[in-house]
Length: 68
Image (cartoon, rainbow, N blue to C red; front, top):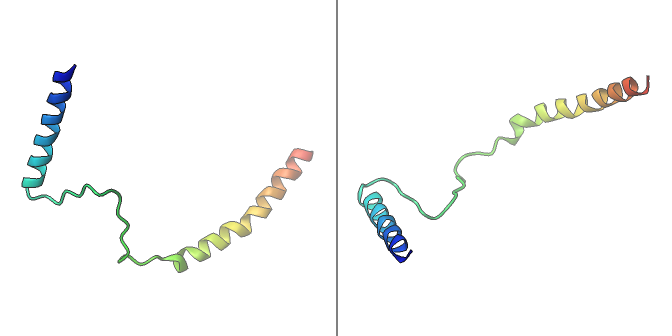
């Protein structure tokens, strides 16, 4: 069992070493959020308003169909 753990540790160390030396942009710090990209809330606002306006109509249609 200890041989498996040692083998895994050596393989992981070798893999990380090769990835770091390959010149690629390897980032081990987790998920990044790009703050440079603009948040386009104004473009999605009309679509959200249209969807919320259609919601009561669909709900009332479903309720009236269920009551028949």
